[in-house]
Image (cartoon, rainbow, N blue to C red; front, side, top):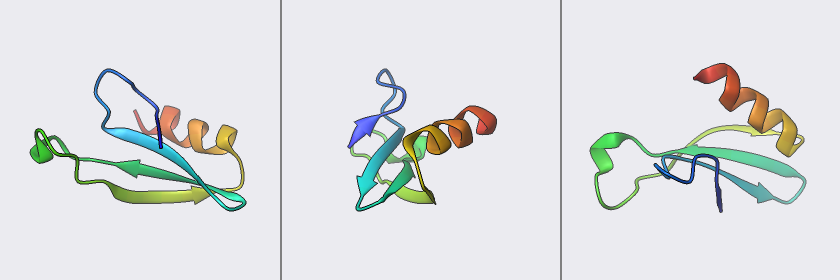
Length: 55
């Protein structure tokens, strides 16, 4: 997994076959991330667009 925001590590993008999956871990996870899938995208660029629009 590659962190989208390497300082917080709350959002990750992982390649899964031909898709790019966005994962998010809530602040309540504290020291151990509890990643949850937010969406699947056809390209890393689309996943980044999703994250940019989200925040």
